[in-house]
View (tube, one colour):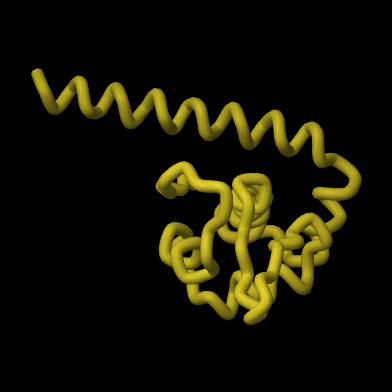
Amino acid sequence: MHVELPEKRYYGIGEVAKAFGVNTSLIRFWEKEFDVLQPKKNAKGNRKFTPQDIHNLQLIYHLVKERGFTLEGAKTHLKEEKQKTLSTFEVVQKLQKVKAELLKIKDQL
């Protein structure tokens, strides 16, 4: 999944949930379940996600929603094969971008 977010230092939970097409409750749940997600919280307790958090969320989304991993399976996979998973995930993202560009070109013909 390629997430469209403007380039910023921090993102609110609402805009993150909207970009992923999920409820904010799922983002909060994943935050509790996955150690790699540690958004900053301001004085009011509002979560502020960094670009690294967004990248980790994309990886979690990919494993759970697209590849059908259970939460425990995704956690184990992230711990044991994180580098391999990251490499595969990054290749898939690049291929999806290329596909989108090729479809744009096709539509312009």
